[in-house]
Image: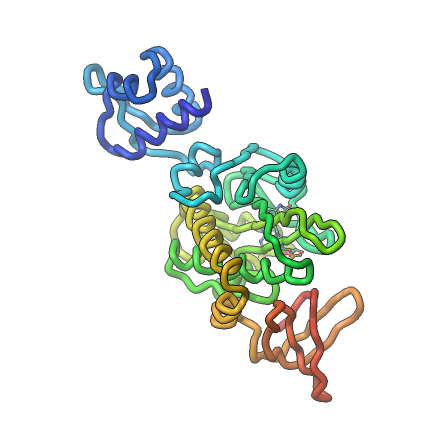
Length: 324
Ligand code: BT5
C-alpha cells in the first residue's frame, strides 16, 4: 500500500500541473482503478491538492510541506542516503529511534525523520526545541570504518555539507561555528549532534542528529533562544519545502562523505576553514573542566580546535562551547 501510494505520488509529481490518466497509472502501477482512487483520497487527506477530471485523469496542483517518507523520497535523487526513511509525526527524539534501527542492522544512509520532537536533545543534555511543522529533525546512520579518534571529523564534515546545502537552497551564507553550529547572520539556524556506538576501538555506528530551523518565524522561538536563533525563512524572507532541503542535505552529505572515505579529511578541512566563523578571532572555549580564552588558530587534521592563550600556549580543544 505505502509503496504504491509513493509510486503514485512520484508519477503525479513528475507530471506536475498535467493530467495523468487513470489508465496510465493503472498500467504502470499494475493496480485497479479502485486502488488508485483509494490512494488519491489518502494523499488528499495528507494535504495534497489533486484535481480529478473525467476522461483526463488526475493532476497534482499543490503539495504540502511534509517530511513524510513519500514526500522526502521525491527529493533524494540517485544517491543511497535516504533510501530507507523512517518517519513518525511526533517522537521524543529521532536519535533513539535511529539507535535501535542501527542495532537492528539498518544500512548506512538510513534516516529517521519526525515532524515534531518532544524531547529533542542538544549536547551535554541540553534541550533542542523542535516544534511541529517548522524544521528538519533528522538522524542519519553512518557506518564508517575509521578509528574512534577520528569521529569528530564527521561533525565537521556534516557542518560543511549542511552549510553548502543551505547556500544552494537559499543563496545565503551559512557560517560554521566550531564544532557544530551553523549561523546565518550570526544567529544559529542549525545544530549537529554526533553520537556513536563503539566496541573497543571500532565504530559500530554513528548517529548524526541534525536539527535545522526552516520555516519558523521569530515569534515561534521561546524567549530563551529568541536572541540567538534564526531560521531559513527569517533570513531568506520566504518559506522553503523541508523535504527539498532534506534532499539537498543528503546529497551534499553523501558526496562529501564518499570523498572523505576515499581521500581523507584534507579537502573537508579546507572547506571547513573557508566557512569557519570563529577562526582568527578571540574566543572563549567553555567546557565542563573550565574555560580558556584566546586566539582561535585553526583545527588539526583530526578536527580538534587549537586555541592560543595569552601566554602563547596552544591548547587542543576536543569539546566545548565557544563564545565570541
Ligand atoms: C546542538 O546542541 O546544537 C545539537 C542539536 C541537534 C538536534 C538534532 S534534531 C534531530 C536529532 N534528535 C535530537 O534529539 N537531537 C538531534 P548544542 O550545541 O548543545 O546546542 C543546544 C543549545 O542551542 C540550547 O541550549 C539552546 O541554547 C539552543 N537551541 C535550542 N533549540 C534551538 C533551536 N531550535 N534553534 C536554535 N538554537 C536552539
